[in-house]
Image 1 (cartoon, rainbow, N blue to C red):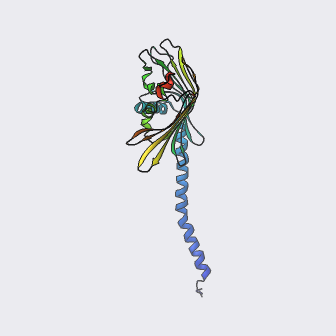
Image 2 (cartoon, rainbow, N blue to C red):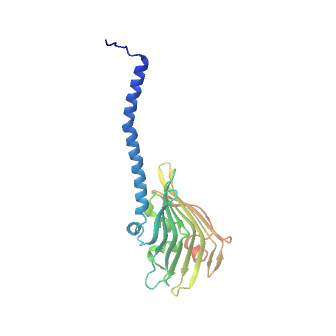
Image 3 (tube, rainbow, N blue to C red):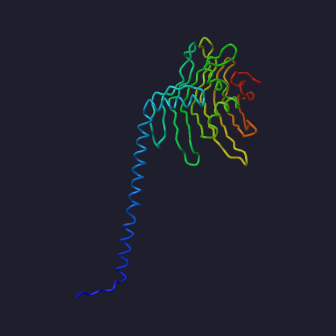
Length: 258
């Protein structure tokens, strides 16, 4: 004889728990799949950036944006998952073998609240100045007058508010056609930060450098701050130069007073 037992409250709870357990399996499996896929992708990127093909891509893109061909000795991923390029150079041009750019380290990464960040560590720029005042290599000419705000804005225009930009402990040397140093600016620090003003996207620039030596003597540290505002252009905020005045732009770099 079969006895039919009426389902109790505990039986229904057990049944609901079993259904929930079965429903959670696909979700957990999908999340696990996404996790392992993300890990595999990160590992793939870490390996891919170490290849010569990747460095060639970076060089080609830089030439498109800044009209400057780069040579990159090494590339890797470093904490906290930044792209690090080491020994980045702009090869010297014929007849100006000492001119060019050397950057021991370029670090590109994502920063909370600021987005993409590009940092140049201890870059060294060497230019040859002709008798006409032009600089070689021509693609770095804007750096020949580094205290010229408009020139710096033009040089960094390809970034177009896409990233924050920093230079740490830069060095700029200008030589005459016989490769004799005639001007030298040390300890160059720069920050470029996109900001939002009411109804007008802008970029904030801060430049510090010094001391600077030239045939006219030794000048104290330079400090400049300005905005590049859409629809207006360059708006100066502050400028501090030699204690005997406040040289600006090419006047400071040339070692003369305006």
